[in-house]
Length: 272
Image (cartoon, rainbow, N blue to C red; front, side, top):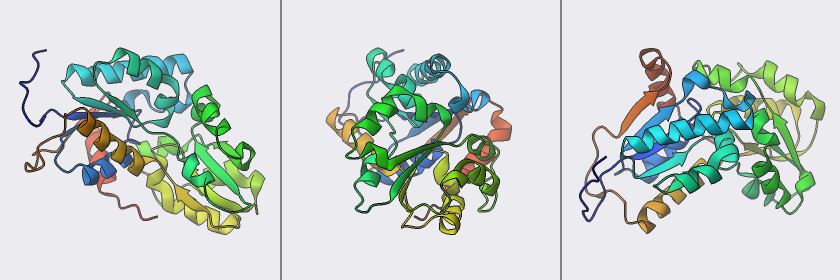
């Protein structure tokens, strides 16, 4: 591919990929933090969810998604999937020719909260088992304070556009009833799909736990890190130009069927 001519600013898009629609929760933060940037979003909806797959499968799928975006000429890549980050981020950073930024479960700020309650880390089954996440947990001041809970089923419902406040009671009850009545200081949304159901999680927590139950996710911090990386590499867009269109949606699935869900999720307000 022919390189774009060097200018003071870099108009090339930033690539963002996820196993499906989860990375849209990051994209919303990025659009606020970086309003002059263009984005290509790739959802591997055909192969979602990654959380039920083996580490080898996740690595292969992540490599394919990342390479497809690099082939389209992106200037940087965001791995907006906690599971893909855990399985593939080191390989992607070694092999790709562009800067790579990734989301991480926000257990550090959650564990920094004062108090004697537990910190819940809700994620996919794969994320809670992969060595990269386990190493991250081990670096916390009190790793035993963290309760890791894999929550299969949530991703699949969000992929269908289901985000209702009462639509996840069955899954949350099945996965969290073993700590009924526990004091919970923080709840980490360790999958980028989970911010879309923050009201459902908050509702369940208020009914079944004590403590503050404050929600945390890593999306805002990742958007700020992306901004730093673009600036450090001299590849930021012209702040005086508003891109049009700002986002291009791509998917490995049925685009006609999935694009309305993508647009709906991009506009869903998250207040927590």
